Amino acid sequence: MRRSVTTASIAVAALAVTAVAPLHAAASPGRSGAHELELTVLATTDLHGRVQDWDYFRNAPYSERSGDATGLARVASVVEAVRAEQGEDRVLVVDNGDFLQGTPLTYFYAKQQPVTGTGLEHPMAAAYDAIGYDAQVVGNHEYNYGLDLLQAYEDDAEHPVLGANVVDAATGEPYHQPYTLQRVQVPGHKPVTVGVLGLTTPGSAIWDKGNVEGRVEFLDIIETAQRWVPVVDAQADVVVVLSHAGTGGGSSYGPELPAENPSDVVARTVPGIDMMVVGHTHRDAPSQVVVNEVSGEEVLLTQPYRWGATVSRVDIALEKVRGQWDVVAKDATALRTRDYPEHPAVLAATQEYHETAVDYVNQVVATSTEELSAVTSRYEDTAILDFIQQVQTETVDAALDGTAYDDTPVLSIAAPFSREAVFPAGDVTIRDIAGLYIYDNTLEAVEMTGAQVRDYLEYSAKYFTQVPATGAVDPEAITNAGGTPDYNYDQLAGVEYDLDVSRPVGERVTRLVHPDGTPVADDDVFVVAVNNYRRSGGGNFPHVSTAPVVYNEQQEIRQLLIEWAQARGVIDPADFADESWWLVREGERLLP
Image 1 (spheres, helix red, strand yellow):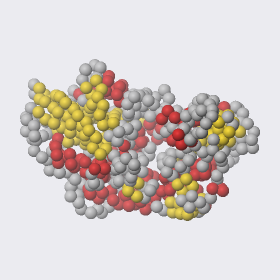
Image 2 (cartoon, helix red, strand yellow):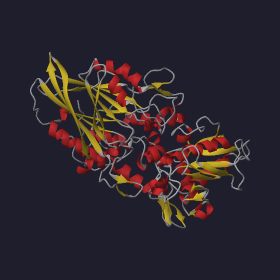
Image 3 (cartoon, one colour):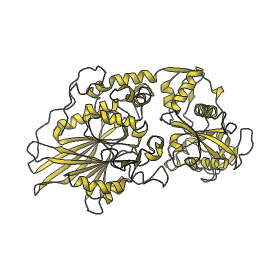
Image 4 (cartoon, one colour):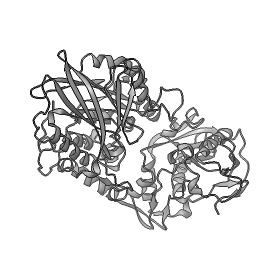
C-alpha cells in the first residue's frame, strides 16, 4: 500500500540536500484477530503553503496565543508516531485541499520563479511526498495560479489528486481523478479496500473565474456525491470522502452556484459513506456524527484545524462478516502538532526552497519616513490602506488614458486584510508589503453609478454593530458584526463619506460626496478599482460582479505595491494619505 521513502526519493529536483533517515518507521506486528482489524486514517486540511513552522511575514518561527504550531514538517512527526504505534500498513494519510496558496514560499514558486518554467519539483509536492500521503483533494485555492501550475503539482505528487465534481468544460468528463482505491494489506488478514472520493466547493467558478472559465466547471457537491459514492462503495470496504467544503450550507457568493458548504448534507442524504474529512472553513472540529437518513448508519465527520495545527486521527474498527469487511466502529481525535518536533525529512526536502523564499521576502524595496500601522484600519481611515488605494488608483487611471474613460473619476476599493501589518520607519521589505496585502489578488476595474456605489457602501457597512444613540462607544467592540470577517469590510477612496453606525444596516451612508464636496448623484459614473476576488463575486457585494469591466491586465496587486515602492525608493504618507471616510453618530464623529 505504501511507498517506501528513502533519502533519494525526498531529494528536491536539481537541489542538493543533506542525507537524513527515512520518514517511515518499521511496521509493528498486528494486534487483532484474523476476523477483526483496526485501520487509522490521518487527515490534514487547508495547509495553505505551510511547510516549515515559519512566519515569513514576521521573519521568525510561527507563534500564536493558543500555542498551536503549523506546517507539514510537524505533521510528518505526527504521522511517523502513529505509524510506529499502529503499524505502517494500517495507516492511511490524506489531505483535504487548499495547499498551493497562502505563503510567500508558494507564491514565489508560482509567480517569481514558477516551477512551470524552471522544472523544479513543487515544494509542496516535495513535502507531501516526504511524508507519503495516499490521496488528496483539490481545494478552491488550487486554482489561484492557473491550471498549468496545478497540473505541474499533480505531475510532481506521488499520490492521486482528486476532484470528482470538477469537469472539463468541453467534454463534461472529470478533469481530475474522481476517486482512488487503496488496497490495505495487513499480514494475516484479508486485504481491505479503502475508497477515497474527492469533492471541492464550487466557488472557484467565481473566485478564479479568470483561470477556469471555459476550461473547467464545478458541479454540485451533493449531486456529484450521489453519482460517485455508489461507484466507490461497490468496490470498497471502507468509503472515505474528502470534502473541501464546510458544514451548515452557508455561502460567500450568491445563488448562481450550488451550496458552498454542504458536507453535512452529503453525509445525511447520500448512503454508503463511512467517514468524511471536512475543510475550507478553517474550523477546529475533530468529531461530528451525522446519521444518514437513507441507511440509518452513522457517518463520522472530522475537520482538522488549518495550516497543519492539528492532524485528525480516525480509528476505524472492522469485522469480517460472511467473508467481507464491515465497519463496526469509528472514533476521531485531534492530534496537535505543537506537541511534535519538525521532522528532518521534510526540512531537508524543502530547505533550499525555504531559504530562497526567506531571502526574497527580506529584500528592502524602500524607506518609510515614519511607521505606518494597520491596527486601527477596521474602524478608521489609515495611511497604510491609503497606500493600497493610491497604487490601485494610479494604475487604473494611467491605463485608461486616451480611452473613453479618460475623464471618468477613478475610485478604489481596499479592505483591512491584516491587523498586524506595519511599515516600520526606515527600511521596508517585500515581507512588510506582503504582510499588508496577504492575498494573491489581481487588479481589475469596473464601471459603476453613484447609486451602485452607495449600495456597495451600505452592504459593506453591515460589518459594524449598531450602537446606542448615546453613551460611550468602543470602536474595537463594534466590528465583525454577524461574524463578518475583516476582509469583507471594503473601504472606498476617491469620494468622502460618513457611516452612521447608530442607524440600522442599509441606512448608514449619511454623506457621500465628491472630493470638492459636491454630493454624489445616483447617475454619476465612476471607474472603480477592485481586486479580482471581489469583482468575481467573492463576498456577494452588490453590482460589482455584473458591472462592465473596463480594466483587467492581470496585474498582481501585491506586486504593483512592491514596484511602486521600489520606483520611488521612499514611502511618504504625504504622497498618498487622504482621510476620506468616518464613523459617525448623528453627524458627530466617533473618533477625533
